[in-house]
Image 1 (spheres, one colour):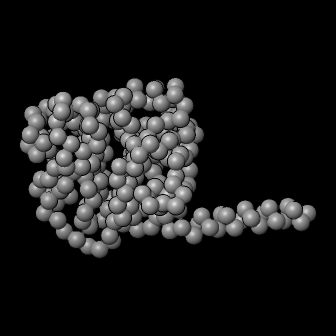
Image 2 (cartoon, rainbow, N blue to C red):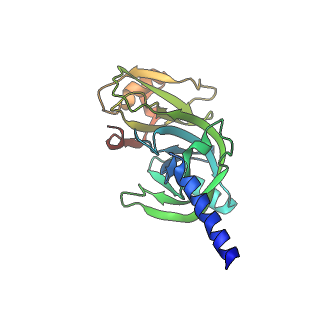
Image 3 (cartoon, rainbow, N blue to C red):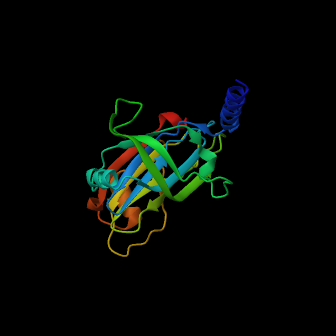
Length: 224
């Protein structure tokens, strides 16, 4: 009985330690990409445990699932999301003492909290690279410009808005780049909380408007 009690005490202590981390929680993510790369963008808010903008390059541990997922996503802009097990988001920081290498998650077509349908349950998502890890400030702030980082280096690329004001919007856009095109960030004038149109994005990229394939994700409610 004493051994059981000790085991239970240790389990409770471990759970308490995890809960004590201000970033511990269920960190939903937008999932996008295709054959050239697979990416996940944390759905941020201006409060704990979600006050971070994080973008990951990932793959699914099961090769068959990974291939099937990339095929379904490839060249499309339909929203997919990740509904993961709970973990400490701080473990994705570049300086994390115990980095998060993988996690279990349901891969959902649509928004996992807004009627989406699970397509691959309990998949193991492997973190290949942390492309962005930024803590967000809860202070009210206005910005005249919207800055977008480029994700991907081939023809199949994505623009992800840097969240740098409050209120703000989370925006992921798919576009087709010419071979050897610059991967530098772009900046354009911000129109309140409205997503920029294809013409404005194309002009900032110096590409034809037809190169903008469309919006993968756009949301404002969690960033007010």
